[in-house]
Length: 202
Image (cartoon, rainbow, N blue to C red):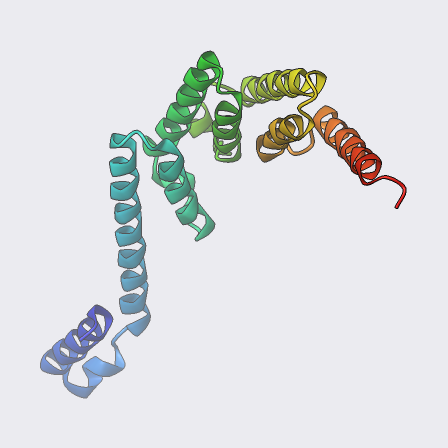
């Protein structure tokens, strides 16, 4: 028997034993349902807390943040996870910093973007995050700039498809980075023109 049904049945039996039919008339079913709803939310919060804690222990802050954001989308405020939410964002940014230092600009950009998207709105949680929004955006720009340069180097050496592939990685974390969008468009046109030249005049 589901927990809710057990709770309602127990309340009905108790009301009958203590007050007969009059006890049933005075039974506040809304209170029973309300407390059950509160219990369900508490269980969800605790499960999300356990999941996020495990993911952070595995050094997987991205999935941990995704798990907490899943609860936020269901109506659970980020403030319900006062230590886990900031820790997830802080770890994401630290991992991104390491990737940036090692030259993995695409990987770093992806993590910075995830950290930015998961940056909490609540001032009390923001105060616990080491990097502010402006500095994360600046690092996203830096990753995009470095990948643009890498693509340009491939372009200058005649590796047009490789250049497009490098520039396309920028779109995952900086979709409105205009320099890469223009470079991709121009290079694709050049590839189309080269194909036409190879095919010849019929």
